[in-house]
Amino acid sequence: MEAIWQWLEALWQGIEAAVWSLRATEMSLFIRQESYWVWPTLETFHFTGMAMLIGAIGLFDLRVLGMAKAIPPAAIHRLIPWAIAGFFINITTGILFFIGNPDQYAFNNAFHFKVAFLTLAGLNIVAFYTTAFQEVKALPAGADAPLRSKVITAISLSSWVGVIICGRLLTWFRPVYVF
Image 1: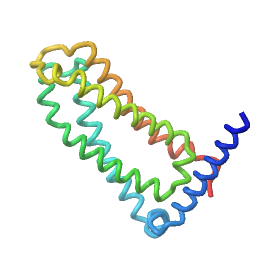
Image 2: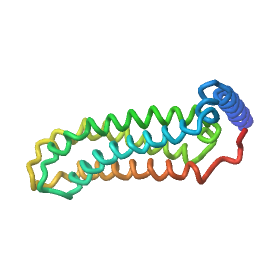
Image 3: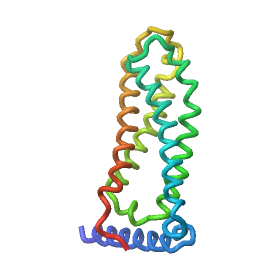
Image 4: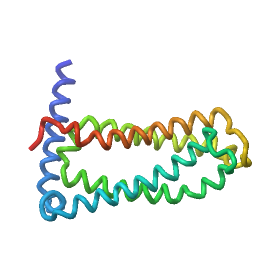
């Protein structure tokens, strides 16, 4: 048991050192201090990316779950490239947020849960496209999706809602440990 505690202590010290090093970079200082417009601009892009991502995926998930049955799922699926673009905007801005204030993210449980929800969403995407996509894609307007597809899209929608909620909670649950 003592070895585990020593390992955790060493891990914690390594994370602290990495965060301190990242916080001291020119990029971090620029994002955090040099301009009043950098952070709000990043936030604007982040929210735009989120709207693109959730707008397209949310609409598709809701269709598979049974809403708007008059629209074939394949027609809504054509919006997924917008979701992918939104995801890449969010990953880019999210990395820049992390670089700007690494201590506010690395030690924040809301961030840890956000990453967990992102991971779940990613695994769920793999599950959907490897098991259910072909049968959903072939559904005509008015058809009900199979139960497996509904379960997967319910997990998808829940995961993305979790990502959004945890993202909002980041500012409310700032870690006690701040440089």
